[in-house]
Length: 306
Image 1: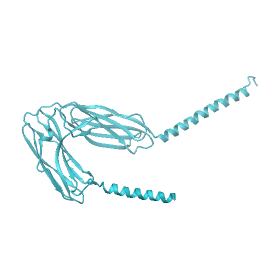
Image 2: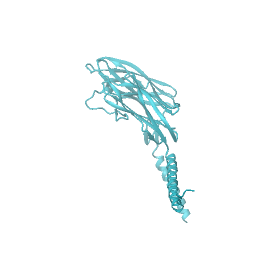
Image 3: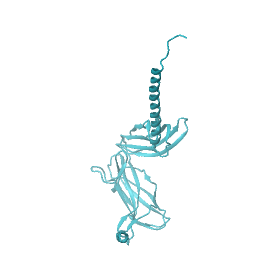
Image 4: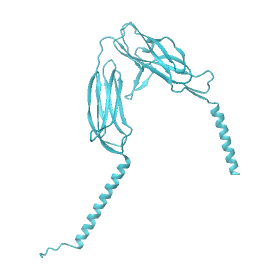
């Protein structure tokens, strides 16, 4: 009887699951869109217009309806979490961008060219201004339930021409000496000027014989009046080893070396082994001392001359 009741419950749950998930269809466009280039860095005089274009490539096997629109661009925290909401008291840079089309269809294995015009208002102070152009897929008209669209973005690092302060530095470079895998180092870059800069960063991890074990080469943008942290992680760090972490970073075109950091990597398992071996050695020494002391008391040395 119990087996029958259990079978009935399972059947009911399967039917309810089918009803629920069948009525909550999820439409998700596959990640097949790419945009080129990924960043645009125009220099524009106040009161003038700059024209250009970018491409959106559909690498999938079906066509997509897309919309094109602009949004503000800024970052939060040293991890540079993107923020696309307006910042009170700042120019509405997104309104400077105008596109040749705001909607289109991208056929499979085809590229859509989007022309744009950037209009900088007169009397705009010199410096850096930032916005992003989004290309977003739209669900088919017959899709129902939860809609998940794909979105790709083109960041515009706009420089309004004119005198502007440029300043930045390496704020800190750190890697703890004693670590568990993976090996981690952190680089923090600061921008105290009024214009963005790109930093070319190279990090190399070497063993004690100076043989390279891990290399990271990347380029990161640092926006004005921000600090950006880059966390370097060597995912395939061995369980035990002594390593040197070195590298360099360019600040406003000047290459600056990073001081060498020594790191002793030891996994939790290796630590337990060392602790166990150490404990056994200590116990052995204690036992040796105790039995040696007893032996000397039982058989004292004779002071008589032979």
